[in-house]
Length: 317
Image 1 (spheres, rainbow, N blue to C red):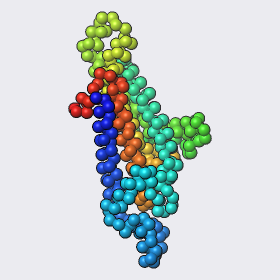
Image 2: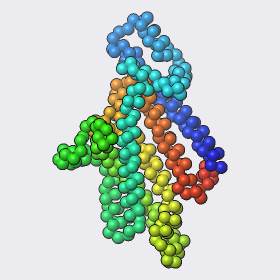
Image 3: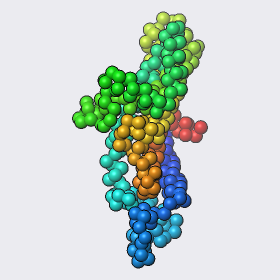
Image 4: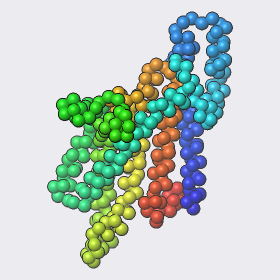
């Protein structure tokens, strides 16, 4: 049953990526701007030189043929050539992907640890602790990533001098130090969302009859929480955490730009402004693949967190 579900999910993933690749290519195909102008650097080309460039980059062919050339190349790891830079797009993306990947992973760890931790604390400790977490999370959820970046730079980098603001550092500890403020800025509002959803899920489970019965029978609290409360609350918490982490991939460009990180998000913005179509197509496809894979991992984690869940039943629901 689980193998069948996973195979269906992989098939859906393939269809999703195919549709997304078509949408990406179509959007850039109809975008204003002439690739030949970028190739020539604004110079006037002779008809012979223009014909050579059109042939080399398949610009003399129709939409379907160009899409097929691009898609078949992408399936083999070839995302084309950056026209302004005359460099392989796959190499350009690979040089910057680790920065975005490190930033998103760092932010994901912060979201999981602080978001779920604060949500658990608020859900299990009614009173001033719950109220304080609710107030702080409400304020944090309303702060956009770029505002959080500005405040963090002003306080912890400029005023206190605790963290650097530019660059990625050397070595593991250097990377960790340089990415701390960007990761916090990226994760701040998501921590608040995950904390609030976790609190609500924990409260609902604690109020259920079988949990109250277990508590009244004198079963140790830690056993009731781990055996009954956390297991049943795991799925909504996992769902919101997965969706939140996946969304970080899209909004990382804002934080990368604020902190001068040369990651995929910032490079995507620069490439779009410079009409480097091949790079825009390549980065967009990579971001879509990452988003879909994160969601696939979240779906498969349901069975790991709660073995009672029938994956096949979930797929049919």
